[in-house]
Image 1 (tube, rainbow, N blue to C red):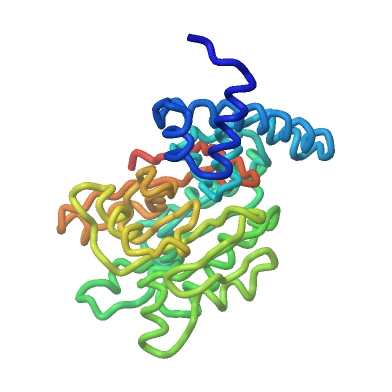
Image 2 (cartoon, one colour; image 1 turned 180 degrees about the horizontal axis):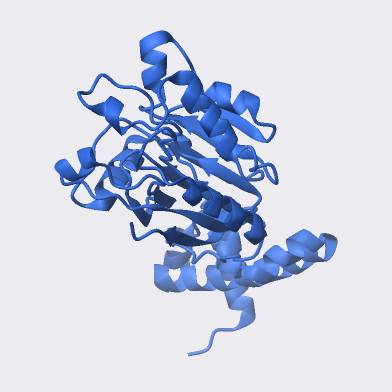
Length: 323
């Protein structure tokens, strides 16, 4: 049975004055029917109101076009999730940042082939990287481990420092960022010498970011962390990085993490962090082989697309040496 417009308006007036229960009782209809008439009127009023507001503001017009009347009412009431989860609109465009990376060069070790560093420099220059980053153990250092002295091609702080400066002085085509690692800090522990900081002070394009870790801003909305650590390898290559990311509080998580120390390469996406195990430039040592620890020798380049939401997409290439 159809109901006249006048009767509907009378019912709505009763709702406005006395509420749904009284309006239903006085009109002789169910409470749900009363609510239906009220909802229909609200929809009409909302559409008229939305059009009026949209006509006054281009920004509000865009909002009105994107959301339904129901969603706009929920938004106005402070229910920002609209009562359900929206599928986000992804933007995969942005500014490309090209990053050359390496780790664990161990300058001063007999297991370093100097040509590997030269190869990396030439590839970085050819590919036009915006920066080069080093994730620690720049030098071999001098430990108290029995027999370690026989694995050193350069002995002592000065010799390893000068050799490193000689190998990296031609990395002058872009900024070079370095952190130190546990091998570098053997000089610090033995006599207070900060070898990587001193090396960066002698190189025109280099900057020392810190002990064991350092951070780089990639524009306003993305960041990169270099990390070394003093822990051990894990059988599952991703496990070490998983535990590291789990240990970071939400506000400390970078968008990209490049990790050194264990001489393992791998690319993983963990808790929205692009994690790169940077491998090493040093070949496998006898000590590593004796401990049954593999060495992933090589370097890499990251192409990161950065926009106002952070990292839109990432491409990574590893250049391995099958040593």
